Amino acid sequence: MRDKSAGDATLFYPGRNLSAAEKARLESYATELSELTSDHIIYSLSRQVENNFQTFYSVAEDVIGETKALELAFEIGRRYGGTGYATWLSEHGYGNRGNPETMAHYQDLVHAIRGPKHTAALFAEYDSLRCVVRRGACIYFDETRPANGKYTGEFERGCFEGYKAADENIAEIVVTTCCWKGDGGCDIAWMFDEERMRASQVWLG
Image (tube, rainbow, N blue to C red; front, side, top):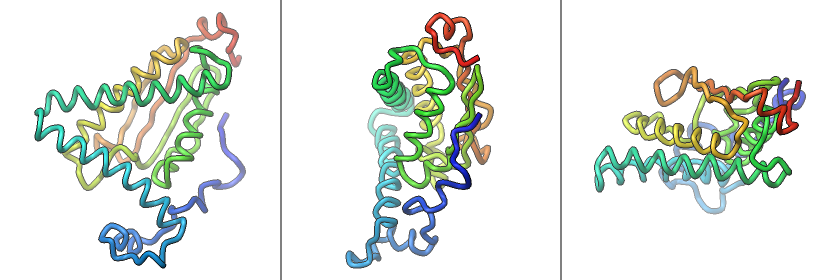
């Protein structure tokens, strides 16, 4: 199954279709205030999130060294991923026991509200035992700063620990490919435990 509307629902996502020239003008602050549209603003906000992560990693490495900076990236990911999913599960009455469908709904929501680059992760696919997200770009990895990929990896690893802490039905998270490793895309599967889902009455089979 796939959480997807007919056609490409992200085709007209604000900021997605800005030209490379327009993006470059924004990056160099050449865009005039009178020219700004919602596309410029949404794209810029999303880009700022990406820049903030990369700046943090670079500064942390300079101030406290690579080892401690990697530990920080992991802990940020653990709190970031776990808190968001735990909040979604609680809001929808699942407590700390979800299933592949709940994960798909959560993944699609957060990927839809965090800017045009994140829409590369739409839409999640799921069956009775797993939820799979595939994407060709990652907001937490900047292709122009590949040396920071190691921090993206630790952030991701922390996110996965956070997910497992938030949902007791998750058995394993399998990463087949990942942008920060130079694979050109990500393929991530959240694997759920059938017995635990049956016990918590969220089994999809």
